[in-house]
Amino acid sequence: MSGLSIFSAFPAAGPSSWALGDKPVWRGGTPANAGWWHPKSVFAADFVKARYARQGANSDFASAFSFARSSTALLADASGIRQTFAADALARISGVGAYIGGASTQLLTAPSDFSNAAWTKSAGCVVAEETGYQTLSDTSASVMATFTQRVAHAADTQVRTAWVLLRKDSVANTARALWFDCPGDGSGRRRLVLINTATGAYAASFATLSEGALAVRDLGYAWLVSCAYVNNGSATSVQIIVIPARRADIGDSGSTPSLTGSVSVYGSGVIVGTAFPPFLSGAKLADDLRAAASGSDPFAGFAAGNLGNGLSILAAVNLSRSGDGAVRPVAEFSDGTATNRLRFYIDSDDRPAAQVVSGGSVLATAKLSVVLTPGRAVLAATYDPASGLYLACKTGLAEASAALSGMPSGLAALRLGSSLGGNYLNDLVEQMQVCRPLSQAEAKDWVQTA
Image 1: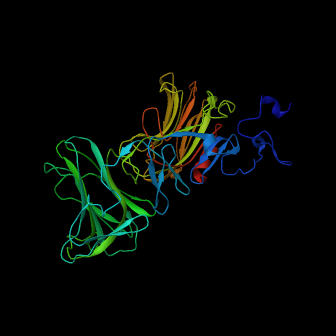
Image 2: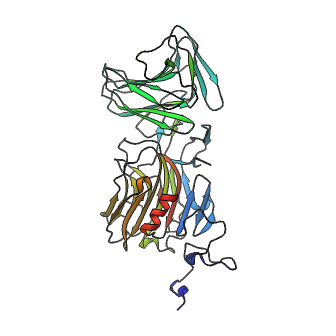
Image 3: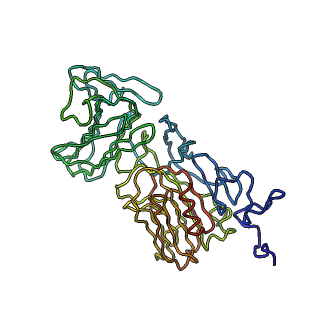
């Protein structure tokens, strides 16, 4: 009996024709222009190189996705140059990926323009305009020059995050300073950060007051320095102070008022919450990226590929933060409700997880022991009643598994980077693929080589 007799149609993971001398995809053949998606892939997106595929054939973004965002958005390229994306246009840049996030509102005035009057400048402060950033200089030999902006807010207990994006340079003999100050009743959150912008080495302290949670991230072209604090119910403002030249190095015990120097800054910001795009002006509303639907099919090929009986999700994401207690969705299949869904996410403890919910009950959950830190994370999850729920991560090749008795019914939507619960990845997606169920060996091979 021919192997083709078991199919009622050509499988969704391959085209219905192939070159002379080649073989069909499901027997090891290679479709034209393939090579970057997995052989079992039904749906694939590479946001770094702007290429997309469905059913084993090349596609385009408009055919593969639906996207909505009711505001403009900013995203920087690999050199830190900002690009503006109109409403309903995905913030995606070649070589970087696509940013998918929730709503954020910038509280600073002119966050990327330190020449603006909103920034209070002491004697000796000079601002020079560069391509994509500004250079802030301290020309005084008698005082320590500072650039300061304060934002008033309610005396509440909300979490706020302040940040500054410093351009990398080769100046190794001057410690630049950032002061995140949340004054109010004398017990606000304060954090003084001294940083070497050549190496990224930093020291942080404030002797008497409680401190916010500090993070320093290497973005390739810049150091992203952020400080998140929980307001104590009394503090009524937050201010950012940028000091272009404070000490000879981060180990000095005191300031050096006569020191002169400069530092280049791409931008800064203050928001309510902890998840933010590094570049933010005004209000950015939430992104809604979904696989393009075809009737009740989440995307062309879902039903034909029999994915309702098992599937795998492959993802490469670039994380900017950890330790903030947020649940960050990677991908989520659902029937439009939380009753039936497949969850693939990073849990509040920064550990990758996968879960199956059917009829409102959790059928299975798999969670890795590895804790993700800022940087690139490569993940794979397989939902297959025949072999169970399986999860793998490139970091130390961490693995987790769980028994799975079935799959939820009525799956009709695939969200990328967001969830029904209103959570968002708030970071970059490099690649995402949906495949027919992969074996554990296949999943491990992908996370190790992607």
